[in-house]
Amino acid sequence: MLDLRSIREDPEPARAALRRRGAADALDELLRLDERRREILPELEEGRARRNRVSEEIASLKREGKPADELIAEMRELGGRLKEQEAELARVEAERDEVAATLPNLPDPDAPEGETEEDAVTLREVGERPELGFEIRDHLDLGVANGWIEMEKASEASGSRFAYLMGDLVFVEMALVRMILDLLRDEDMTAVVPPVLVREGPLFGTGFFPGEREMIYEVPKDELFLVGTSEVSLAALHAGEIMGAGDLPRRYAGYSTCFRREAGAAGRDTRGIFRVHQFDKVEMFSFVEPAGSWEEHERLLGIQERILQLLEIPYRVVDIPTGDLGPPAARKFDCEAWIPSQSRYREVTSCSNTTDYQARRLDCRYRPEPEAQPVPVHTLNGTALAVGRTLIALMENGQLADGRVKLPESLVGAGLPEVIGSGSLAGGSERQ
Image (cartoon, rainbow, N blue to C red):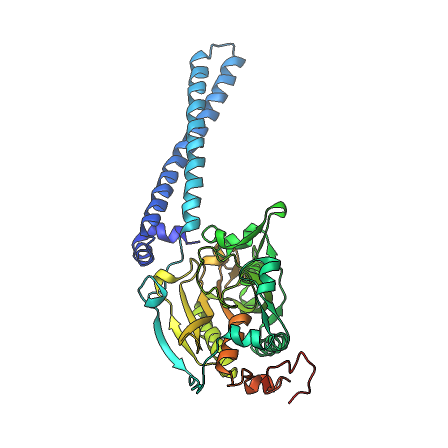
């Protein structure tokens, strides 16, 4: 949520920023409703004060036995006018709040222009793409051949865009998660297994509601929702709190299963496990002082790159354009892994600075000094490990001519064999 008070004082910078996101008209509507509210309030207060005075005058006249018909008529007329003003105020405030809830964050001035992912700016490419001197198999062919992925039975059990992960792949996932959580612990992040069912408040607070409601699975009977990212649950950890400056930064690493309906994604990435309704993820989330949020943004991106380098996955970093930012983000970087079967880079992590946008909606503040007025913190989020997409990148970049997969040294050091396939783990064979 934007700082309406500062925008009211000087709306042009916010208007120019939101014009880059196509939301300037909504801001003008918000300011119009806010101005009308401020017009109604003094009129309403003046009318209520007049009503109190007239009421006292009527009571005084009645005590003295004098007629009060004119004042009583005025009171009736005034009461009707006040009811109309109160109704208009309630309507204007409701409309103002509705518009305010839909406005996105102000984009950072350095965020590139553009409307779609094709307008993203490539900042760097890292790692050597594998030279595979044989026919490339995609992750689903590799997964089916080795008994790691079962899509047909998952479709029978749960519908499309679900999968069973089996055998070797389960052990690789567990090793990945443990390795990443250990790494993040060394980065002073507290490991968390958060709730995956939340009320509406955290989803509104993080900016997923109202705009992305169609993407969220809902349990109407219990008024709960399945999270699409543990960012939602982690952000709610300090909702409604006032922290001291000494309490910041607060950094968390949340591991959870996530759920997305993928509404509007019909026909996109339907093969395999790239875009599914259920997936596991390790998410980083930071609460920091405003002055340090851009440094924290680079810090989170650096951690994401370290992880991809540890896993020996070729990748590139892209700067997301303003028109493709999610509503809470002021700026976002994506790391995209090289996928040999598609001969292109695909997103595996994202990293966003949401500045004070989420904190205002969550009422999460801190005191810069012991006696100072509390102000909103800044919040940031970044994917440390999107399990499914990371498995895809590992399988395809590490594939061998016989269909087995060579694992990176970091996973071998975590206790996995150098090469997996043909049931080397699920069958209980000795580790290499």
